[in-house]
Image (tube, rainbow, N blue to C red; front, side, top):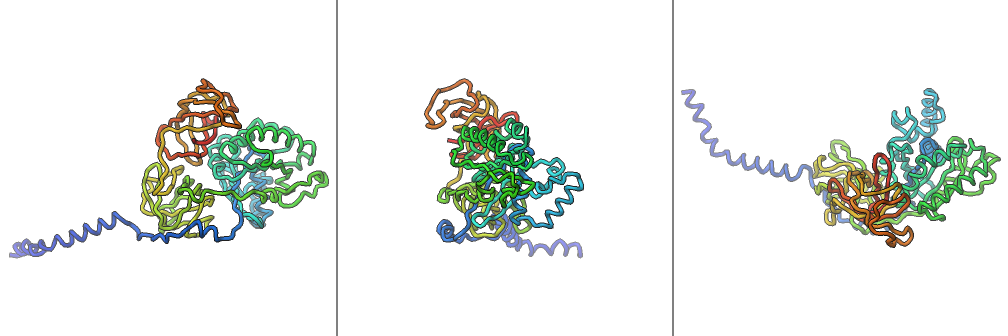
Length: 466
């Protein structure tokens, strides 16, 4: 009987099963649609809000130059003199550097935080540091000078408003730097749209503040930089010493330097025009980094807004995957904000998207006016090497994808852009040429993106997508 009762009891319950099933199904459905509560957009008119605020000029600059020209030391000194690094931290670096017999590297360590960078004494990735003068808040993008790390340099340069080219004035080193990365870096930043360049002629203390040496460097570099497409009014030269701190924030007190009456490096930086950014264009940002920001923010991306505006609650699209996401919260220069505009460095905390759909180099764009994925594009480029139809790697900021130059369309006049010769078989270095590039996979690219073409570890061309 006991057995019979056990089998009989479930009968009335069987009638009720549809109810929990239905609510369970609803529960699963609501789970799959939305994991987190929706963030409502306040529909802020970002452009008019942005115009109301009185703010300092903001500028990003990239520091370039041959390996060992003293770039990191110069910038470390600048940050220290402007009190962006305190005395205690500096003393700690000095002690650590002396312990491994590299005392002169202490300032460089302000920027080079990685153990590998410190051991090798070279910068590998882009270090970013912020500092402010009375007029401007700056972000330094300290780019690696070593040729193995040029792709990292491209990523930094593509975010820069202007460049500081550091040159080692000491005998023999300027010349070997010119044969090394100095020229490639200067050509690169010009080709990807940087228009203004400050040449910091460093290690002048080693060159005994020789006026003749400074003039020799100035003449050679002026000729080269104007040839690379910089306008003379956008090139300036400052003789300085990163180790001694001369002509960086304060004027040099060395009597041998009395011939120099121009601006210090910081004064020259302050002359930078505030750059105008395309606020009224659709939102575009190349993703520099993807990370998990903690339990509250499942997925975060960082980068610099290239155009447009973005606000909390807005829906955005990630390309090439075409997946949509929502902006849960955002930060501008590490400060929580409700909105951001083109030209600002931002962290966007996303919701409604799986990490598998986002990677470094992807484009984050407006969901209503997305960027298109392309497998082929036309570009107007400056050749740094002989070009033929050939295999290459295309770099745009952190995006890089293999492909090939499938067609040399025509060589162009540098000044007017008029066609000089159609369908050349081969293009000489220094020539401006229109090419068709085919890619191994579809990626988000549109005019006027700045692209760099590399082959076998060398930069062969750079220019603009048409």
